[in-house]
Image 1 (cartoon, one colour):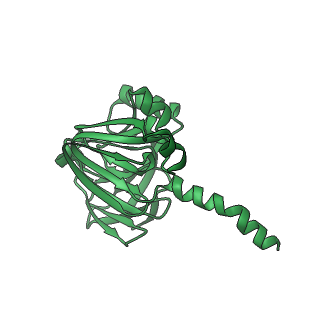
Image 2 (spheres, helix red, strand yellow):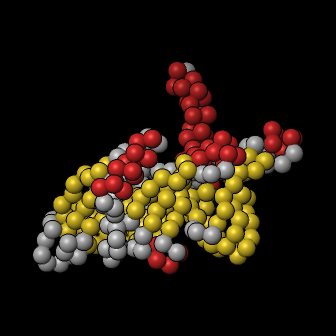
Image 3 (cartoon, one colour):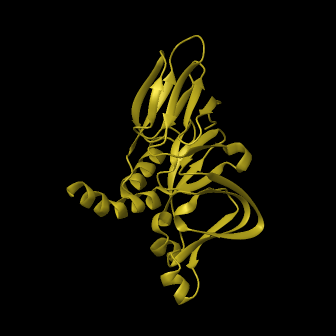
Length: 245
């Protein structure tokens, strides 16, 4: 299914919003709860699946999303008016930046961390990819279950902190498992030991690192939500004791 051609504008700096402009009859799909505002003539409906496949494909996709705890419904926003463009906006559930990806320019596929997907043009297939490597599955944190986007239109994913886009040409890079946002076809993904025992236990970088190798594009984030949450939780006893005092 060919994706709808949508226009968009990304607003803001540290906490971004993407506003999608739809011609009459055009549709954008999004995860539940991502919408911020929408203009007149935009109608929305929660549908089972992403609308990219037939009944059999839809049921198969729904089964995978249920298995991983994902919602089986996605919200479809459509310009039902007959005149000018109408706009609908989406934002990430935590502070960060939005990455706009033209799927046609990266080979029609994008693998991203679970929950990174924000919205995309109708026709984009939003599936689940299970990592085939046992090391990545057991030690990669969120890395065992990845989101698999397919299509030839615009897709938008979100990340925490600063986003860095790296282009690998038959090269490798090692990153903290939480700092990976997404990667294009041609990139191999695996989890490997961080180093010697002393570095692993006292270096503060964790026991394992994600290794990305091959030729393609990699998107990295400087502040994974898990890291931010850990810092907040670590401060909670101190904040509580100060309030009690």
